[in-house]
Amino acid sequence: MCGIVGYLGKKEKKEILIEGLRELEYRGYDSAGIAIIKGKKLNNFKAIGKIINLEEKTNDFHSDGFGVSIGHTRWATHGKPTELNAHPHLGKYSFVVHNGIIENYQSLKTELQDDGISFLSQTDTETIVHLFEKNYKDDSFQAFKDTLDRLEGAYATLLITETAPDTIFFAKNGSPMLIGFEGDDVYFASSDTPIIGKAEEVYYLEDGEYGYAKDGIVKLFNKDGEEKRFLKEILVSDKALAQKDGYRFFMEKEIYEQSTVMSDTMMGRIVDNNIYFEELNDGLLDGINSIKICACGTSYHTALASSYLFERISKIRCDIEIASEFRYKEPLLSSDTLFITVSQSGETADTLEALKMAKRAGLKSLSICNVDNSSIVRESDASILTRAGIEKGVASTKAFATQMMVLWMFAIELAQRRNTITKENLQIEIDAMLHTPKALIVKDKLHNKLNRLAKRYLHGHGFFFIGRDIFYPLALEGALKLKEISYLHAEGYPAGEMKHGPIALADSELFTIALMPKTVHYDKIKSNVEELSARDATILAISPEPFELADDFIQTQYDNHPMLEFFEMMVITQLLALEISIRLGNDVDMPRNLAKSVTVE
Ligand code: M6R
Image (cartoon, rainbow, N blue to C red; front, side, top):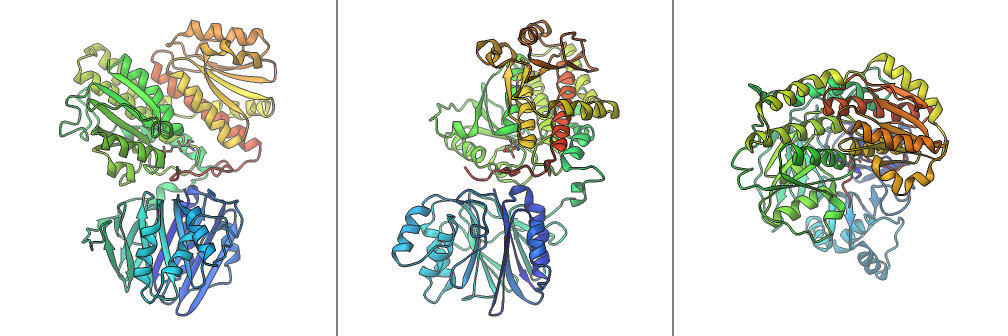
């Protein structure tokens, strides 16, 4: 969570920092700030809320000519979203920005307070700058190293100080950071988007690494304190992919894009009517007898849906875990289990830590991820990229769709390997995959209908999204989308479980979104929905089969393959959430209290 940027060079620093922060705003937008040291002059600006507020505050400020600068956009963890809690944090003569959590900050803070140092903020980060200044005698780098020695927890941090006004000190442990190089200019950022178009070469820092940048040169040290020679990589990426193109919100654009990105996801992976992943090399799957998948949020939902496919089609045992639970349950792990992580960002702290745990236990690992070079990708033995392109909306859509496609394809690939699928059924699966981009096309008529329907679903005391089988995780995802961007209470539930308690809530103010596919237990879900209707719940049924008890009905087109039904219904739930949120006047792309990438525990 939080995004950090840094720049050392002669260009207009304010602009570089603010542009960079705009690219990272999806990581948090509770407050933002920048600090610049130019010669002996210290400048610092902070604003609550989005970057635009910071921009307004810095309108009249200019900062070209050589100097060092750092910036931060915050997702609050310690302390409310106030200006005092906004980064950069100032000591007497130094500034720091930080992404992560300093777990021992309370004891450090007490120690510093006992030394007479007063704190302005409630953050864990402020301890870093005071500790640095306490450690400083006459060598800034030594003071920085001594500070790092005392920190426990996760951090990506940048520090600038009047005692070394031409230097940026940096360190990374558990939170992402990379360095960009262009001539004598040096850039720092939490992800590559702020650097694209500015620097052509980058280095992705590894955990435990730290150092400093001065005179266009970066000195890098590993966790044992040894200076490290490092290889820069070429930064290839296309930022143009992340513009709104006339859509009202990125989320809307990303829903519409699903059809085309899905073709990218499949490209080169269906060869001669077989599924083929070139990423699965070097005996990754040799000796594997079961699968465990760990993920969070939306990615957990695709994982859960895929478990039905792995067990049903690939005939392999598949357990799914929420990463934050898995980490502390002291799981029993066996080395014949393939450990899969699913993550859009590749930076989710809980998922990353779960992966490290599994690796320590000797498991082979595969990540299904949208961001190449992300921490999870780099930590995994192998990775399959979902190729969704940059996803900017905090509410995940195309990442969900492409993860689901990769997991479906991987289940079929395993079925091929394990001889658990007939040639005929393999053909049916591949035909359905190739048809998916069509099933994801958003038709105007459908979107207009959802726009109108949204009006009726703005109040009430709650929503239940219900489904069975793979449509249960889809129900969870539909409810999550609605919660995230509309702030209305919604739950996803297995349809057959409603009678075990939640049906007590049923009345006309309970909105039930019923996913009623024809190909998966239609009669069973129909009975479940009838039970709700008999108790007066308001029903929005989504099905290829007309359902006369529905208050509202959306007729779907596909009725011949579960995954095609799945993807078609997925689009409907996404659009419903989008339209309700827009009607409520919410900021769809930056919902309150959320951040795109959760890099804290
Ligand atoms: O980047 P990841 O897929 O690991 O992120 C996991 C969740 O934080 C994420 O899916 C979150 O639930 C989204 N906001 C869902 O829309």
